[in-house]
Image (cartoon, rainbow, N blue to C red; front, side, top):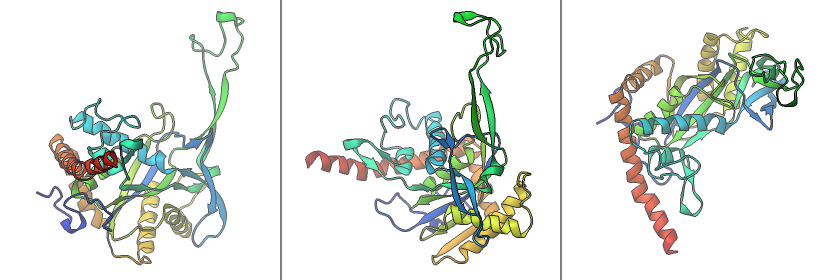
Length: 336
């Protein structure tokens, strides 16, 4: 029995296929920072020097949110839910240590365990870029480590001189709040359950980047879904098109942060324009067309029964796939 009432079953497979079958579901996501997250490598914020827009040929530096900075937190949220509703035991599947190989997380997001087996991820995420330039999007903070008395002055413990001010001070660049990262999350060959599983993970994930227990708050706004028989435009090109659109409508107001409504409107206009240029068959749920689908998904994910129905169907599909294909691969490898 279908879980969704507002979308044609033709967009989904009835079971997870072993070979690529040319069906794609693209989640059009705008990630907006709500605190001071860190997307960094080797102590520095990730950034790239790129063209500002498609039409605007000026070159700017943009913050970059690498693909694993996006997919890993979403995957971990899904794994948490599987444990919450008792579809995966904590000892059965440990992320990056010992994968269970037969649950929705392993089959949809993939795994690799040396000679034991591997499964390629069906979720494709690429680097996302900030709409605004690096200089407008980050801030440098001075960090310190206070003593037990709450001050920076030593009381003389462990060889320190009373009243001596600690030198435990460091500087760190952080991304500012209200910085926007357009990101397209692609699910290959979706079933209805895998589509809902990934959709729910994106909506639920709230923390990205380093130090996720203290900062890194990010909200995901999905502005639409595109079903197609191929991959669509890149994150960078979508971001550049949004920049052009906002430049034309005079809604880039540096150094003030971007207005969220302006970004959402520009993102919709830009992706619709870009999709009109594509050479693939596609069905777009954007703007008003997307609202009915979003309401349908939220009705399911807002109740325990709804979540359980999604996870149960996804788990059944994953176990059927694992038994049919992963077990066969292990047997073949053992007998080789």
